[in-house]
Length: 285
Ligand SMILES: [Fe+2]
Image (cartoon, rainbow, N blue to C red; front, top):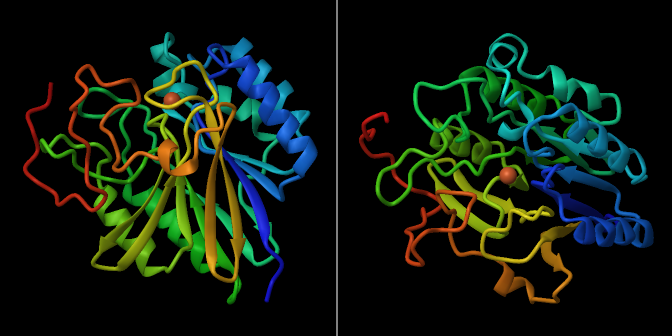
């Protein structure tokens, strides 16, 4: 029996449009509860402006516990396309000295998966793409984890590949889900959609637990700002969606992965089942 481990899972803080009240509350929770680590699953800034990264650095360096951060689509240059193509991660590298790239906690390893790209053959470029290289790097890191240690993977984008209308969300997400399920990981933590969820996808490689965090920014989708508290013990992971409005966890979690991070235009916007079967590509627009 190993001692339970508590992680905080933050996402989509979007410095530049951060929710100061929610951030101050999250800071107080960290100070009072000292989680073993904090995983931030991307979109640290709003437009990758230097001042937004400076604000993020200040905030992260005051937290205390070790922190991992994934690169989000918002963390690459938005206005400077030359820099976006030639050196897309330069601004993000400014904060890397504060971060753990890969984290080894007692009995649990946190392994990153890159799902962002500098450009794509489709619009919007904000959607995910698990390239062969990115997946291979993550699988190699998982394979290097000592036997007996469990693995949590962190990424920006949920890996669900298709919306119910056939729109491609994360390119090659289905392949990545199957490969991660075969490795028997505890879960993949993601952000991007600004609402929390806790879903299990059935894949040909076995079940894959997919845990999404909401946002700590003012860019809320359908739920108030929140973060996930994860308790890991011999039985697996328990998820509590913490929020200032005291909404119970089941009411904070959405039932499927949505296509967009922003609120739907129509309340009945279809959402993607977690194990969505690939369909034909829609025309690129
Ligand atoms: Fe976001």
